[in-house]
Length: 416
Image (cartoon, rainbow, N blue to C red; front, side, top):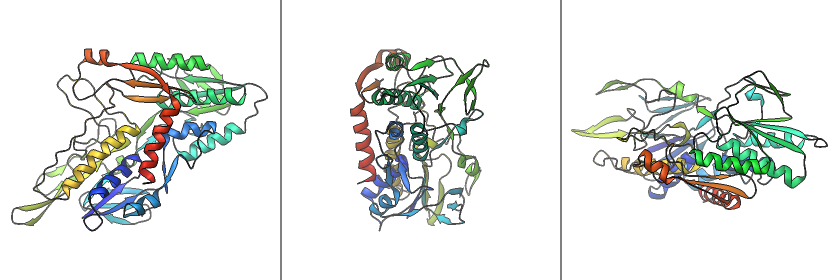
């Protein structure tokens, strides 16, 4: 049996590590494909801007990771998947066959306005390093204007980190955080948004909410009402979108028993999976004897997936795209992959229930060198609107402890 994993970020790596822990190479071959040679810890990228983290601390060697887990590593970009023939195709013409497949290729930054691609970013490690170099090159003999666009988790973390950096180094700069919604962190409960907003204001961040940016230029940003905001350093944190590979592979699959099966993608372009972390409708069957079959399954984990919890209360319970949830999702997939290798007689039984969902977010938010915020809202398994409001807990915590925990988990995965 052969398992192929496309993408070796947090989700893909966790699948490999957990599967290999139970299944040695003689029982299951593993092959991982990634266009990078280093894993990246995006949670540490804002710290690269301030110099409190190095690129080495925020990355892991994928070749060493693969070797440590008896896996073949192919450093090539995947461009297509043939689900009928069970083949993964790369940009260099390589074709990699599989029995079971895991899609863990993540998402892409959403450069949704004119000039956004030319702004700085911390989405990739390379982006963060370039942004750091540009920040260091600024002349701070006079006060500089720094604009962060996007008031989600990444935007608030960057704004808090930069403010502490300027205070610590004595550099004169004004940090402005721009968010198109009527509050920052619109994906979190209002109590959490207000709490984080108060901390950022204490640090000196100017918050511009209900303010949409329509264009970014070298000299600043243009707002929807026509105003121009000068900026010496503009950072884009406007969110993510589905990976372009999804559109390429989103074709119908021919099943010998069911006929043509539609590709499982959500209305907004993300992969749709079952609670088993399996991609709906992409399972293949092969008759190996009279009345005996083998199943060849496709799983998907991490940021490429939009996972919705279906509950009778009809509340929107969508898993949030965080490091914690990528690992939880991957652990479920790994358990079910181990079951799938046992054959037809072993039904999948491990189900993923997100802990950090849109209605019940459970996140740790570092806001610089000292301040962090913990948002706790309980479980997404079963919850009513009244329970959601009652369960929200927000408190200030140590940013140093948050960083320590992030580093511990990243290192435990990529240096084991």
